[in-house]
Length: 60
Image 1 (cartoon, rainbow, N blue to C red):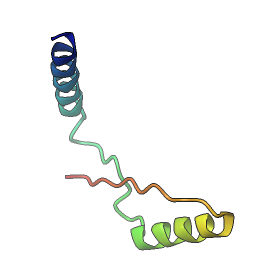
Image 2 (image 1 turned 180 degrees about the vertical axis):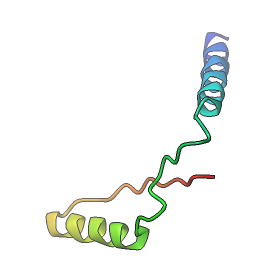
Image 3 (image 1 turned 180 degrees about the horizontal axis):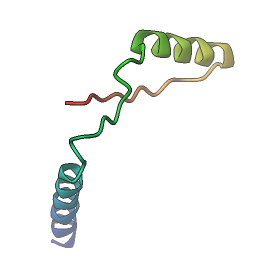
Image 4 (image 1 turned 45 degrees about the vertical axis):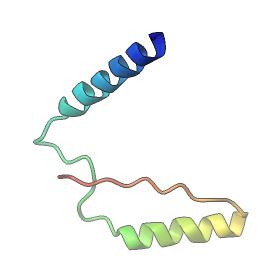
């Protein structure tokens, strides 16, 4: 029961936190070349034998 309450509280805080982001600011660079950035990350990871974690978002 404690886990369910904790999970519910966590979910509520995440929703509230997400709504508090100012809408007049851009979080992401709209002029960025995503294809080039991903290609550079993949090339660099391949040279070092590492994996890539891709996290993406948008200014919606």
